[in-house]
Image 1: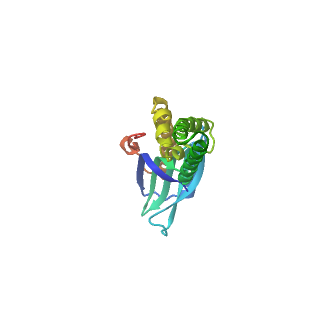
Image 2 (image 1 turned 90 degrees about the horizontal axis):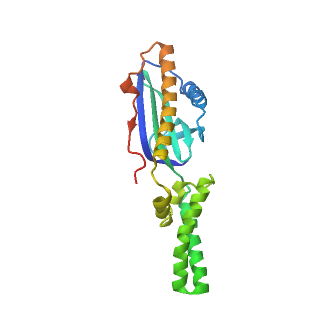
Length: 219
């Protein structure tokens, strides 16, 4: 399973006096998310270790949007019920393989160019090929192929060029990330409100509903 490399925002709350089934909470949350008809998302369940490699695992509900994921945890805690979520960006486990493949391709291009036009001309030709590869990576990402931005960024030199020319931090990118966050956040709060009202518990205050935000898209 790919791990979250960057966390954009986070929220948590302990609902004191609530006894609820995590399975029931997740099923209600899935329905609340699906009715919002969010584009380009997938819903799944993932298991995270509570501690080290051989520790027990805890199930999370994951809402994925491209390289971004919204991991939601719901579980009993003492005499209450704990709910939290994390919005972050994935680091694909196969990113180093993509980097290795790209480096091997560049080496092959260099050796082939040297055999035809000589060392210096071959070196210049290979250097000229790197921006072409960056453009090709941009095309594959736009076409939603198996190549992701995270994988391309793992490639030395090529990743830096791609970030410099094809990963501009735009208002649109920030807005869509925030809309993804707000849509799922509202779905979580909707289910929390339903559960607390059903059990006769107090509703969350406005301050208790606010997420903990971090700086988006640090470079």
